[in-house]
Length: 321
Image (tube, rainbow, N blue to C red; front, side, top):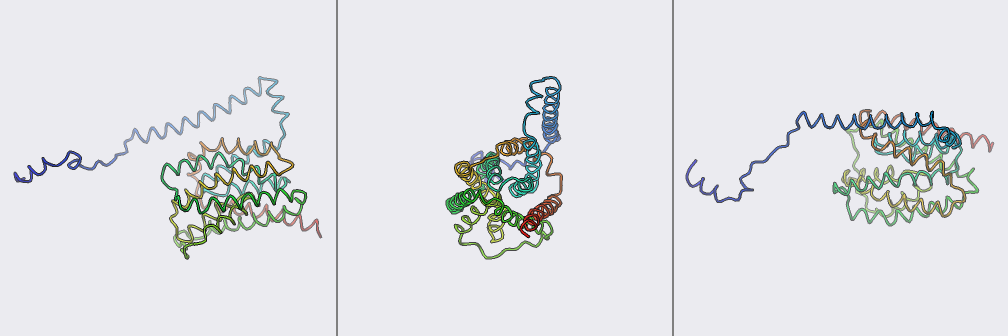
């Protein structure tokens, strides 16, 4: 190396002559990740064993558990399963929970209220993560959030006002979940290598209002409708996902408040079951659900939602006829 090059190199700042350092994943890093997974599994197993032991030993605890409505345990298990599915494919928690609640004979108002309330915590954590990853488009956020809240509040108000006509609103909501089930099934079958890119959506506010209204009336669909429309319109999938998740948090809060203010009856056993079940699934979903093929889960979810929705619609038609 010439003297001139040495002199010019010595005059450069230290940061300018440092070579780029490529992070190397060592065996210890992978072992740490594996240890974390084992710790989560051991902690969950310990919790289950502790609860079973307490139930067997403590008479008061056993009597309290037996006095709780069986509906709570049904939705506790359902909330856990649906949250695991949502963790695997990133959608369908609302539609699966609502469809299950309707199949159990729960009125649409209580179904939608329970689903929205149980989504507040998970959506809030998701929005916080996306904000830290800078996946939120602020302009898109404000275009969606204001009309989305307006549509959600209006939908919750109308559904609560029609609580006396739940026998008629239930098949309408089932028809909506049937359409969402068909949408999920279509996504699972469609070849992912052929993604549609249509004209970029310009009327974001109209999309937000319609998505919020339908989401409140049907108990789910904000992500399926709004996110799918944004991505199909050519918008960035990462920022679209983060923005839709962030707006979902506020829509879930406002929808829940409207339902709890307007509705005459709230099934708190269902609400509590879904909240606890989804909360228990949250730390496990990331460790387990990614091992299952997403397309397989989407296909099964679509089939189940379609069949259960058809059952509700056919039952209503048979009563009318």
